[in-house]
Length: 177
Image (cartoon, rainbow, N blue to C red):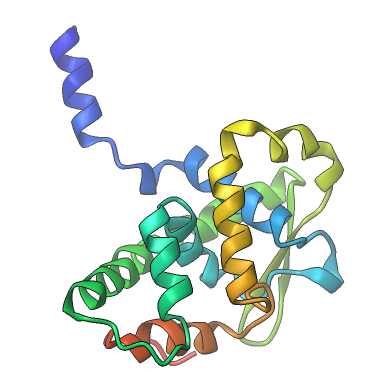
C-alpha cells in the first residue's frame, strides 16, 4: 500500500488538478477585483499563464522583471519563459472546461465577446472566508506584486500580454488573436 501511494505522488501534476486550478482562478479574479461585468477579467486565456506564475516566486519575479522592460533576458531566463508559455498553453482547454463548470454552478459568469471570453466572479461575498484564508497568503502577495507592475493586467488584451512578455523575450508564439 505504501508503494502505491508513493507511485501516485510521483505522477501527480498540480497543473492538471482541477481543485488547484479552480482556487487559483478564484483567487486571481477576487484579488484583481473582477466581481461584475464592468470589472471583468478580459480574455480568460491570460489566466492559464497567471495560474502558473502566481504559484511560484521565481516565475512571478520573472514576469515582473521582464514584462515590457528594457532588460534583456539571458538564455536561462528565456528558457524559463519559453517553458512557461508552452507548458501553460497546453492547459487552455482544461481552463475553459473548468470555467464552464464554475459558471454552471453559479460561481463565475462568462461573457462572450466577438473574439474573446471574459469572466468575473458572480457572488464574491459568498467566498470571502476562502479568499481571506491564510493558506493563500503567498498567492495573494504574488498577485499584488503582479498588479503593481502591470496595473492593467485584468483588462489588457491577450495578445498585448503575449507580445509584451513572451514574444518580446524570444518565445516563438503560434497564435494570432
